[in-house]
Image (cartoon, rainbow, N blue to C red; front, side, top):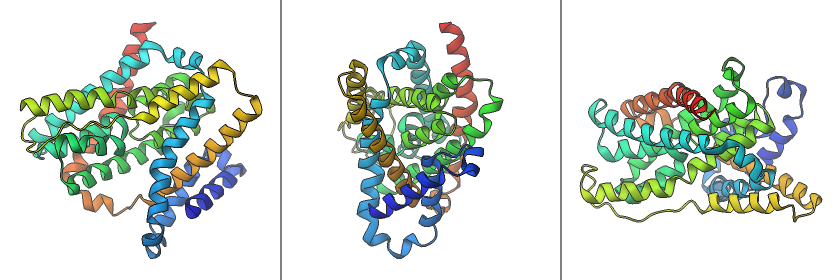
Length: 329
């Protein structure tokens, strides 16, 4: 945890440099960049000793940071996303997962478990969705690792690419936030991609992403029913254990408290500062765990499927955002 905190501190300091501001690099983006560099150079020498703290930062502190992020958000901002944001997320989740299963099994000749795991990670919330889907389809450990690797690869690409293409998308900051939140894989990657454009874009992106995360529970219930009925193909030994993303609900609770205005401004500022530190630590830990060798480990066919899904999320997701926005105007 001290290692993650040190890298986070470097990211926060470096974000104040004029060069970082010129290129729109936030503390979170820099923390993950530094983490990736260290993770693929010297981290292996002491990974065994640091693994528990790094994983705690990547998982538990990330969720704590997302909960505290609620103190930056009001229900008025959530209402601004509106039903259009819900419809966009529902379409993205349903279409991406369906595309993953159909292309994965028919075109790329992957087994159905691997295709489902990659589809869940791409369509909902990255590695967390992969881990939550695993008990339902009873995927073996190596299949879970492959699915997580694809999320890391293409989610990281999206995290850096979206801010770069933002000036050419013709989107307002709010529309960009909805686009990023509805199409980027991981919560952490959405936070970084939003922050690289503006605080307003980040706030909208996180709201949209959390709406998408909250679709995980009904998605798993539906998938469990499909698997048990035999319509999901060969997923022998699948179980119905459902993982509920409680941190998404706590995020809403924090937003409700902030919207009510019952906390002193000084306390809210302190919570926001703590939130920045926790998220930067989570980014640093995610970078430390991003192994470039994951590309080779995943193999070609899963990478190709994930690449097609990434293309659909970016280009198809942009089209879905555009059409739904027009429909709700």
